[in-house]
Image (tube, rainbow, N blue to C red; front, side, top):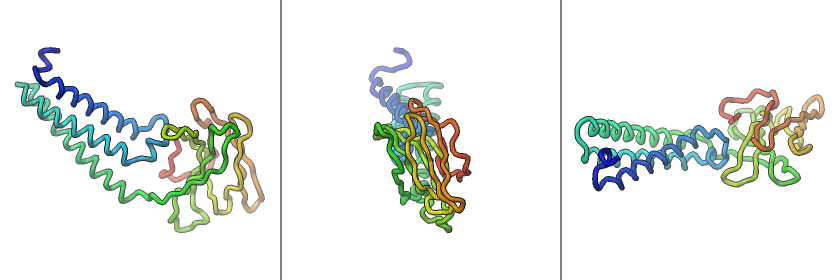
Length: 215
């Protein structure tokens, strides 16, 4: 390690490691394997983390390149260039998402479990949909843990159309009952979920557009 880390550059190495951690956190937010609401609903947060991480990696690579010779210098220079390009791409992509994303989405709490740990959320995904009666909305099961709340997809339905949501409630510790109202009257469907993993094994069979998060 003494040969790899030149004297006086340990703080630069710490900067490099911090940049990797920030970029890794941003990547985790992007992939969001555990469907954390706080990560998925805060695009700006992981964009800032990604740019900061790439910036730290790039600056640290340049500083380390000055203290190295031979192949290590060239590898660090290439690393700095790649992270600079990644940072610019991230900024451009985040600006594009900011302009294209509709932040006027509304949510309605349709039901809360008796113990207060879970809630059924109806997300109005397309407020400017050309035909409000056919507007597809996402129905989700969500824990109530603040930033680290988890979200699971229950189904897709319309809140104002022919088969709109009439009511939702919890029937037991791992079952949600969804009642819809349509031309044929009211229909009820039960959806089971894993309260520990916050996963829904078989969501309701309605088709949803790709813009709705389905886990």
